[in-house]
Length: 194
Ligand SMILES: Cc1cc2nc3c(=O)[nH]c(=O)nc-3n(C[C@H](O)[C@H](O)[C@H](O)COP(=O)(O)O)c2cc1C
Image (cartoon, rainbow, N blue to C red; front, side, top):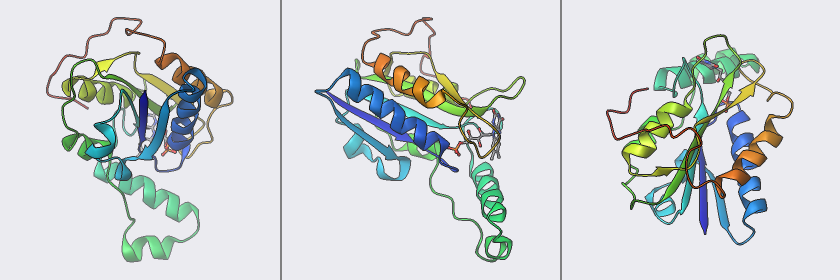
């Protein structure tokens, strides 16, 4: 079994969750080959071989990140590090986000398992990026094996809430056991939304 976990992360919290999910998959399926990669390194050659594809990113403005939201987050991070002049001089570098990445993801053969997750602050009425990710996976004919899941960060830059890393390990382990989404939520092919 090949499992591939792909993540987008500005401050590192989603990367930590992605690595914890990879740990959970390895624990539950010691025979599995598990890769955990940032979007920039996860081309079609990597995803094509996956029996289980797990995708996650940070929540920005109730959904998946956008170019402007990533630039805003990078700028805030650079300025928080006290390098305000450098941030304005060169413009903050932002890598590719999941929205763009999905454009180059080929459709899969029916039956390939997948799941979506995000990180988010615990804001009142806060939505999450995971639903948009799940919709896009379904649009590419992936078979969702779990409901989209959110993991909580304390504030914009983190850290992760206590216990969330452990919860991610358990969630990852569960992905290899659950044949169907527990709620039966349908993410049929559609325009994608946010
Ligand atoms: C521009 C921006 C918009 C955000 N919008 C939301 C939001 O709508 N809801 C929410 O729960 N968290 C929001 N957050 C907090 C992010 O979810 C948090 O920064 C992210 O989970 C951290 O993940 P990362 O360390 O992998 O970048 C926002 C953060 C930024 C920078």
